[in-house]
Image 1 (cartoon, rainbow, N blue to C red):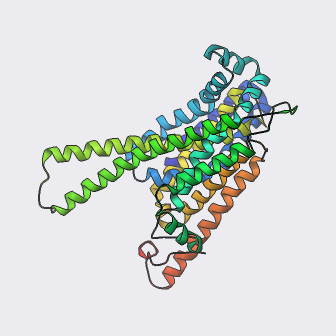
Image 2 (image 1 turned 45 degrees about the vertical axis):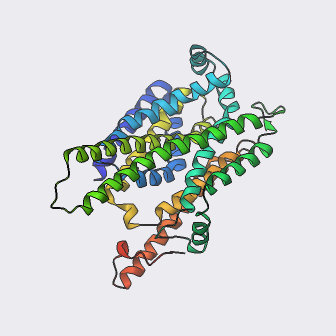
Image 3 (image 1 turned 90 degrees about the vertical axis):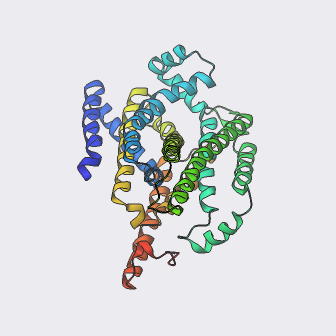
Length: 381
């Protein structure tokens, strides 16, 4: 299982490090290795979130997540996306943006750093909506019951998560974005309008992609429930069977798209943080790409092992880590926060959720119950 799931990650790591050594020597090899570790540490919670979505998909889409998805993650988000951001924000032609990325590393770093407020606002709002929708949903299994029960009651208010997200965006734009330090440290610039527009863009993206995928998923579940009610011995009409297959395809596609947008939001801090180590676009793409491959392999591993079913609070911990990351992204519009802090927060929250899950399973086993079928045990803390 381990070799089958992580085999490609091991192979790409060996090939990537060998390539880095040939192109840039020992220093380049070390930089690529450090960037890989940075990406894994910053995106561990991403693997848990992705696993919660990926387990709903069939093996075909799981393979797509590892094949096409990794191409999008490595070449799209770690190589092409920063260049596109530079072209848009600096109003450069695509050819000129590529030239700057390849030949003028210092200017490229300055342009990407200058675009950070917009990137942080977009990604921060998208991730914040994921967190808010999670904590306002009334779930059978609760980790921090003392907090999640009242929040679930508040969640019955329609569009509460959107309202809170907009309030957070407004506060961020009028505080952090009004005096953003420039790249060389000399003076500040007002990015309030940029942050507002980018944040609203992130919110709209979440509502569209998340809403459409949820719509098709609900329709699919409704069709399946209706088929069960007709009786197992009754054969469904051919047209109805075709409809179910079509809905499954659409639901899977939009879930896959949703996964890619989540991965993009998680990759923002990694791309920006990589500039503290190197401003070479290829070293950056190679190092972060290796780390992204491990995150995807870990996601599939969690799905195949049924880890989220065995340790039921992991999703809770990952979503709290997402909420923390969303707020950190918004704060970094103005203030620099070390990537070690960001990574540790996620690891600590997921570690606590894992330990709470272990304690829950022990209590259930001690009571002679199956931990996976005891919804009345609602809290580990």
